Image (cartoon, rainbow, N blue to C red; front, side):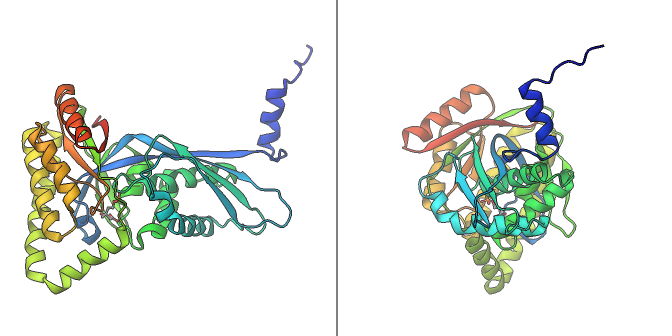
Length: 336
Ligand code: PMV
């Protein structure tokens, strides 16, 4: 039997497999996320309920074969909240260096080019840094044939998150890597379980347009816990019960009660001092326009808020009201 000639596409595929082509490329992606209950509290050992969203960041990694170049270069094509990328540039470079070191990649011998893209807006509160870390971890795994499974990808992404957060809880990278809706507990070792939401439910995420510094805000909460131990102890005790009840509500589709708990969660975060007037404004607009509950999500002091808006009609109404006030929104679903 005559052997079939190899097409040029197949040839390039084989050369890539054997690493003979200079233009091989590793690809990866990471989901964005929304924290429904428990941001900040999760840093101090309470559970948090987090859901991946349909928007994601992609990364490609390719070798740079230019003479006398060592290290890495980044092309960042992600859509962004104006100013976010510039403000986070140094943190992103630190994050990539940490991940390369963790993976044992010697950038003096194998310099790389990284391209970030995808439909996830680079903004605070939506897991943008974790999505970039997860996408990079997957791409580098593919390009260097590291043989990492999802657990290891998550570990690498956690290492990268340290470049942005200092001492991240790990909630963002876990949602970004594994997807779905999770209840997460900080480590070591971190633990998570799937929240079994029987149906999808609509949410609206409103963007204040402000970029937050997570490390700074987390430090401020720590300082408050030191200076006002009694006050913060009470807040934490209430948050613990609220987060646990929140999970039960999501699993039993009790969105009325889930919404009330989100409202209370926002108040507790206000008491910790991590909200701001723009977040409070968007939360109020959402509630006045029919949201079943609304709160800030993620770091606070800017970034995104989230409104629970069961049904397309409710979602549209809330989204339009936020847009009419001059802010941008994301309309998506959580669950299943
Ligand atoms: O703003 P984001 O999306 O990076 O979320 C931060 C969540 C915090 O709980 C405030 C910090 C953490 O490490 O969990």
